[in-house]
Image 1 (cartoon, rainbow, N blue to C red):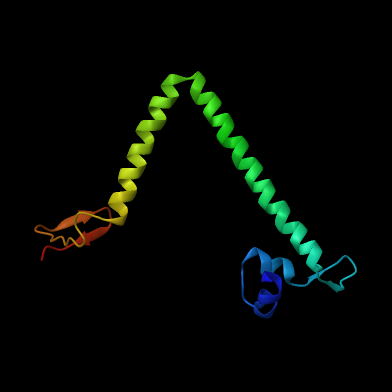
Image 2 (image 1 turned 180 degrees about the vertical axis):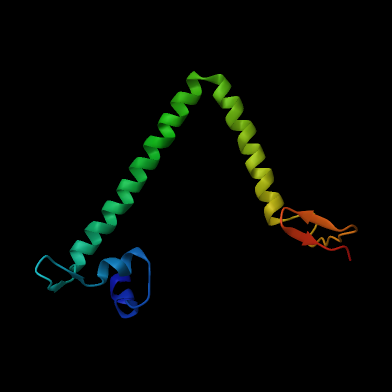
Length: 115
């Protein structure tokens, strides 16, 4: 159903399904297209490869963190800092702040006059 729906929107799109459906040239320079079963197989490969590698990464990260308590403490601290920075990025305490130059300033070759 998705393949049939997306076959009309092939131009100017960058999602995986449409890229797989678009024609490509073989070694002889002739245009070829994947069949529906080939597209389904490629999508399954991307899904399972991504799932397996992510699962392996998380499993090994947990194993290593269980062996090294100091890594756990550092990871918790870094995560808290990352979350706070993301919250501040999304919801800054000051939306707009203007600055005023009170004295003439020279930065290397740039002169900034006072207002």
